[in-house]
Image (cartoon, rainbow over all chains, first blue to last red; front, top):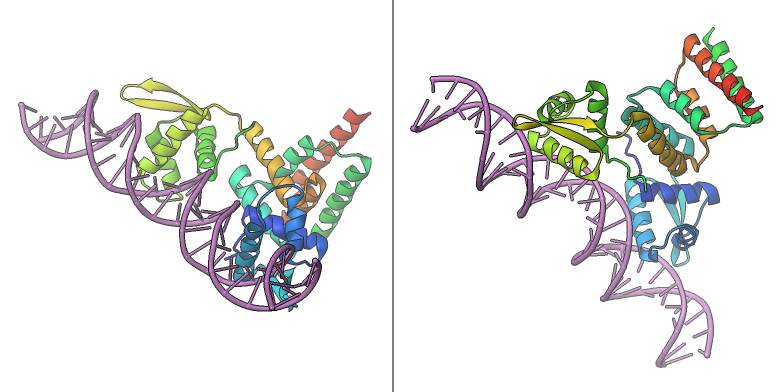
Length: 125
Length: 125
DNA sequence: AATAACCTACGATATAAATCGTAGGTTTTT
DNA sequence: AAAAACCTACGATTTATATCGTAGGTTATT
């Protein structure tokens, strides 16, 4: 039923989406730039994720190379859905308006959103 | 440092934003519509929230009437910020585009967003 | 006035997540 | 070939959250 990654798991996924693949050590080094937990902590999380099916891996010498088994867009969509329900009582519309208000979009970004809106409208007809 | 409510706390806040105010019992009855935990569980959460400053209260006979001490918009903004950072690597733009893609906005909603975009653009000049 | 039905407060427990220490094995360096 | 430096695996601990049981008091009912 769509198990969602925990915060730490999401951090690992984000690194792997970025790098494409990596050993536990490599993922850890990347995470260590912004937080300071021990290597075995990262390893444990990665092992849990492998057991849960969030990651695949292939042996390489004595170690493993890990890959994300889930697509970033899919996870983002899933988590966004949950978030909208929890925080915006299910109203995507309110979330979007709020996000627009917070952000200071530049002209290009505004136009990108306008293009998206037009596309949605055309699809509808 | 902007302490964010936990999931259960957010549920309580959502009820109080809806009702305006309520006793622990009333909040519990409301929550009981969608989940089934004991009354003392809800009470405990409410007491924690009062201690943390999320709620205010006034005595009423032997009981208390509770009020949210925080505005819905403020909490939403806070939590949205955290969510964008965690899940969309800080890109509001990507979150907005993704949300638009998930949602099936109708014409009115599309126009509401367009109006918001125009407003943002004018403010910029 | 006794009992039932409510209330608050709060410690104890359960559950989930994150963190770490350590054991045991393989490479690499000296 | 001994030592240092890596690796994996996994149990134990810590921390945060959620949940509940129970004690002790007030109000309502019989």
